[in-house]
Image (cartoon, rainbow, N blue to C red; front, top):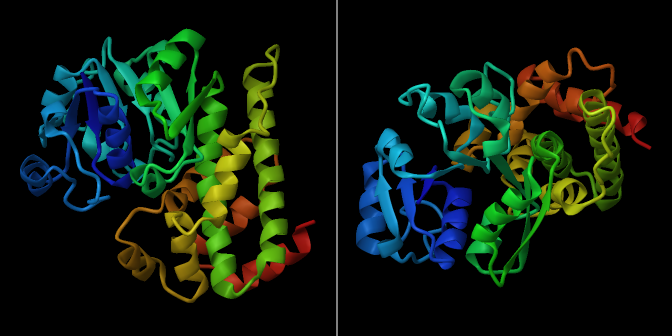
Length: 333
């Protein structure tokens, strides 16, 4: 049994993939209303409500510990900003022997860690039991069964392929790599850059500027990923960062109308205040919180990342967006 933690759009899309392949789910949801709606109407109450589920394959619940105890595989798919509160009810040995899959594309708040590092520290998991899912892939297109791609990362190739096969369908193709840290950091950073792309759009910048902006975002991301990998794996072969899990995910998140991070940034570029933009969204833009996390992670790293710095200052120091993008104009090449 697979325990799915989360009930937003992305969790709903992954539930669709898993149940399409006849996998049985214990599905943790935040609200009893969502549980009742799924049982009675066969769809998620608030997210991707057009997706119809075979509820004979799903046992929804608001009891997190019960879901974890009943499941061999735990799939985390919640906004990173809420994860600490969600995990509070779990005893420290709750994840012992479980296979863990992360579909979280953010930094754990307060600890400023990727999920696997947090779980290693707080729940004593073994890295070999941990796998991650990265894009490029929008939940809305999965719901519509439009052809999409996912990348699965893990330390051991055969086990990673087994995890990927749980999700593979005619309209969802999978690939695998062993770059657990880099693929997840790329997913974190592309959300920050997508907020910036939205701000630029809201400010009135056009496609010409956007192409230059995203090119520079990728160069900045590449420098970080290269430094991080070499620092931690000096004798290993460098991963290919020119692939869909890195460059492709960045492109779609910056350009797509489905991108909540781009949408959030667009509100800001049009003059909305942070809290007003959050209210308009009614969904979490991971890039907002990721910029704070990356600010802390970058402190000891000798790499200049001016785009991340400028987006952080707009989001967390309330710096003027138009002025900051004027400064970026002269930094981009």
